[in-house]
Image (cartoon, rainbow, N blue to C red; front, side, top):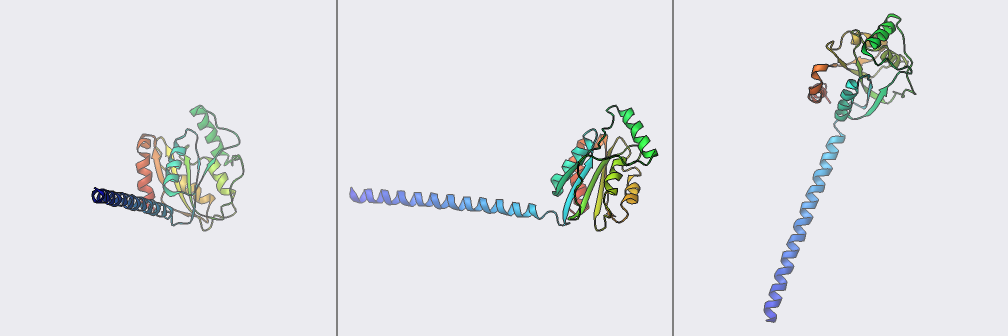
Length: 205
């Protein structure tokens, strides 16, 4: 009986040892996989420090900005004007037209960041009267020079695409480089995640 008991105990110890070893190996593999995923994600952006900055009135541009930020990382900044635009669409368009006619530079709220450490800027805005809001020019003109920066415009609109906004941006940031822009119209908003992902991949992020 003693011999049988010793055999049973020995078998039990071997089985328990095998379970412990198996659990350790599985846990070690799981930790290794998580570590690799983290390292890969942290090295997805190879174009230097990135800023995603945008002005949004209806929320469409903000939605696209957040999608871009999710893909490229970096910092996210929302621009707001000191004086809010009218809520009614037609009144807003009238204000936008008046600002364009006057080549105005609407005052922005808050303190704008130092861009010295940023190499890449994703700049988003709605298209009004075929152009960017003049507050975007306020942002660009705030900086003495954007030399060494690459700007990727992204826009939202009813049907205007980028409009003539890129040429306007280039006039207000002549030292900057400009990459391919991303225009998203209202009827494309449901596909915005796909469009952003494809664009980010196309421009090398």
